[in-house]
Length: 407
Image 1 (cartoon, one colour):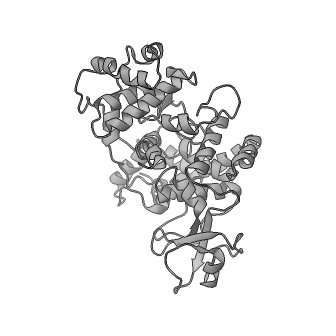
Image 2 (cartoon, one colour; image 1 turned 45 degrees about the vertical axis):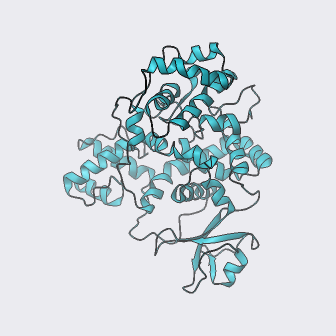
Image 3 (cartoon, one colour; image 1 turned 180 degrees about the horizontal axis):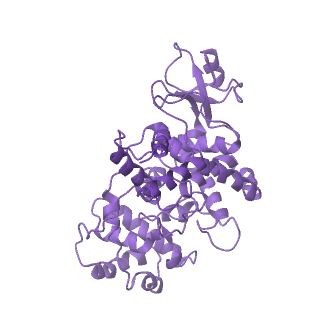
C-alpha cells in the first residue's frame, strides 16, 4: 500500500474524532482469538523480532488495559454531511487565520529554517499545522486525545479487518519507546494513534522524524521536530518542489481545454487567467484544471498541491490547507462563490452563535469562536426545533439570523 495513503487512511477518521464528529460508544472487542492478557504474552515474540527488549515490552504492555472505545470510533461514520463551501468555511475560519498570523511571527525563525532546509513554503506549513492540530491546541487535550498504547493494543488485538496494519503500528510505537524517544505515558494521540502537532502515526515518527531542535530525541510533540519531519515527508513522499506555488484560483473561458497537465503559459493562451487579475508567477510551471463543484470556483493545481495531498488523500482537505495558507499569507477569499454558498461567520459572530445557543438551552461547551462537535450538535438541535431545513449542524448566517430573532 502507498505509504502516504497508509499514514492517513486509518487516522483520517481519528482526526475527525479530534474535531468531534464521531460517536463515542465503547463496545467489546470485535474478534479476538484469545483473552487480551494471553494475546499480550503471545505478541511479545513479535516485538522481540523488532528489537524491543523484554524490559521495554514489560514496561509498556504489562497490566495494560485495552481501550475498547476505539472499535466504535473505527466504525463510526461522520454525523454531518457538509457541502464543499461549508467544509472550507469551517476549517478556514477566522480563528485559524488569526492564530496562523500570530504563529508566523512567533515561529519566524523555525519556519525560515524549514524553508531553507526543505524548501517548503512557510505558509503551507502553517496551513497544515492549523488543520492537523489547531497549531498544537489539541495535542494533549483529553477532550480529543487519549493514550495511544491502550488504543493501538485494542485495535491490534480485537479489530479483525485491519489487524496487520494495527499490529505494525503497535510495534512501531514500541520501537519508539525502545529507542528512548518517548515514554509510554507521553504518547497521547487520536484513537488511531496519530500524535503531536502534525499528527504522526508511529511509522511516520520512526521513518520521517527529525530531531530538529537537537535535544537528542525525535518527537511530534515538539513544534520544531514535528514541522521539520512533516516537511521531510512532503519532500520525500509527496515530492514537493522548492519554489513552486500550489496553484491558484482562475477564470476560464467556455471553450477551455479539459484535463491534462499544461504550463501556465499554455493555459493562459487557452483563455485561462488568474481570478485576481495578477499574472501567473511562473509561466513555465505545470498545472491542471480542477473545478470542485460545477458552477463554483476553478483552480489550476500543480505538483505542490498533490504533495500536500499526499498527507491525506482528500482534495477538499488539500484545498482547505492551501487556502488557509494563502489567507494567513494575507490573500483574500475566493473570487467566485460556490453555488449555494455564503461567507463564513467572523470569530465574533461564531462566538455570538455559541452564546445565544447556550442561552437557548443548546450547550456549545463554551464560546471560543471555534466550531467543533458540541457546537455542531447544538446547531443541529436548534435547527430541528425551529424548522430550519436541512438540519445540517452548520453554524452559518441563517442560524445566526434565526437566533437573533429569538428561539
